[in-house]
Length: 474
Length: 100
Image (cartoon, rainbow over all chains, first blue to last red; front, side, top):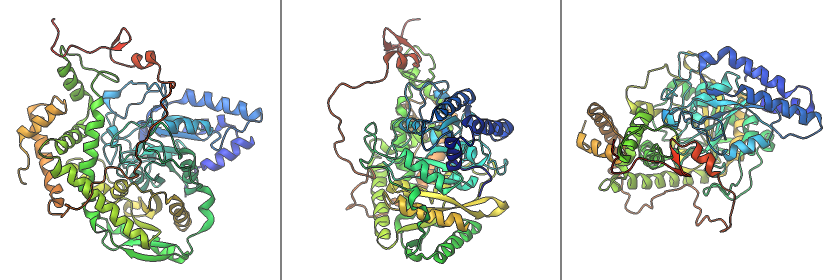
């Protein structure tokens, strides 16, 4: 467990007047001042706005107002969530300096809950990567060992929480971009069910896979954040028309009688230290009264292929909008087509170009059926495998990441090596299910290991019950 | 490594994706993308004829709102963050080029 004060405690203290929101903000800004240069979690620190906001909250509390369940809680936002009038870059040169004319729905919800925004966090450009080494503005370093990556793509959001720069943060998860950095930085990370949290104002990468979720030090904080940001939003046509679940209330209920799935045919690739912690997690849950059941997911080994065809295909379409016309930067040219091609060449980094080209190829005439069409069918197989597994199991446990945090440059030469970081997290996104990573001890070099809890669609309650038990056993 | 795609394929894809990339980059991307397609060949032999493609995880059909006037983004604010705007519209160079 961390030494930092939880979001729930901060909110209680601020709401009761035991501590001012202003002093909470100063405490976090001080930590940012001390270590941000070394960690580089942020693309932008919004100190003045945070101070002003904290002052407003304190004044409202002094007048006896209830300012919400996140009263005075410092929160960091991944820099792919739109914040009105505040630069939103996606860590890409193509959007450098762009100030969105509207807020993402999650931003409005957190604001209404009394949160204080301290900054926009670094990411792999357009959320494409697993180490935050692909940012156009330089990498983020793992606060636990700055010679190692924080994971990605939400590496800045994970690092901001791990370093105590913010009590909680939001990231986005398309193939593991919340859970993997959470595991590598030793914090909790949640990818809710697809459609549970509005994507309005989240800059789109792969629209059928993207989902916003929280990072925190504790399972309870993650449950609270998920409750607050969840719920139907008419501005997102894929938003599930159901009320937000109640999650904080289930945390003390234990796992007595629950069935925990162990994947008998888990794809190879996880290091021994990671698998040892997974075994320990099964033992802890069994001790707490759960039953371990073997499940089979035979199509899981094809998930990487399906994902790396579907996500780039969707990305190639979503990123077509960056053409130098409506937002961000433009390279001047005499004719429109040259302007498009030069703007995109100058604005996008290497990995983004690679994925746009892969996606364009997979969708092109003559190759659509062989690549994109086939990948969509494999996606169905994976979803069907999960459906069969969840007949016998309430949740499934796997590693989050095959390894602990790795040194800079270790996987940058070969894109495929980097893609394999996501082997255990990708299947959930394809199925649209919820999953979360909970820190569960350490592995090589004393770096944290995360255990991943997977659950069926809208199975957040079961997932959080298991997470709470693992947290207390870790 | 097989040769699943050629440098000419990659150059064509880059054109379709409106990316102006150098010849050296074409070669590098060809090698990298070819390696990926090699890896993706693991699904080549799956029997998928009777499998329905899955495009979205939570099927919702005909998500429509009431056809009523609603507040929307401010025109000036939107045009204010564009690279070039004129007379209330986005300004772009002509498709056929313009005289110097």
